[in-house]
Image (cartoon, rainbow, N blue to C red; front, side, top):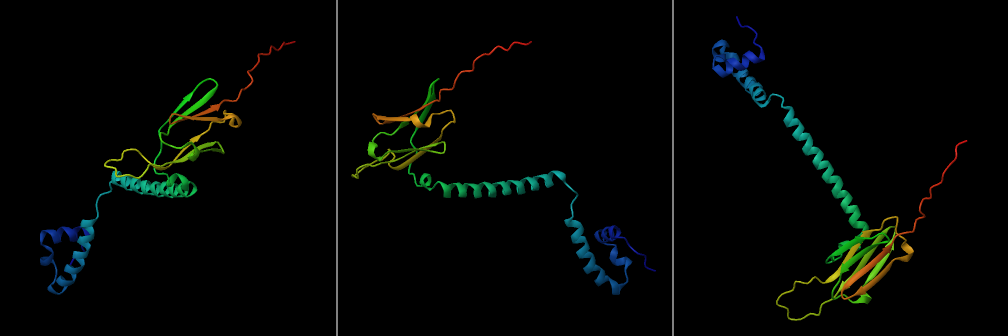
Length: 191
């Protein structure tokens, strides 16, 4: 007489080699094929590991954010093609005093006529070209070609009075602050 085996018992008997002795010869081949499939599934299942699930979730979220930032970067690059075409970015210093902001950009060897300075929607843009005569150079360390630099202009700047001066290879841009009326102290009498 054959008794019914639970799936867990089937696995134990199969691993111990006792399953063949318990079954009739005609059923052995069918049970071997099906139990191999079942045991394969049993071996593949693992205990739940919440840390592993969190790591997988973090990887998926990272991929999602990477895709989003790459898409955003592509859109930004389409908007600002002129910055993508720049060959180099000149060094700049930004200083603030009580009355103005000052931006000093190092542009040695740049012709004054090739400079283009614009303020548009609170963005200060500086563009230009540094051209170097072609010669039989052995070594070239100075950057040349098109350059572009962009700065955000604070809301406190009086954009109508921005001034620029180019002297000795340094472009000095002065962004004066608006003169805001000082608050007056008013004494209110209580009656």
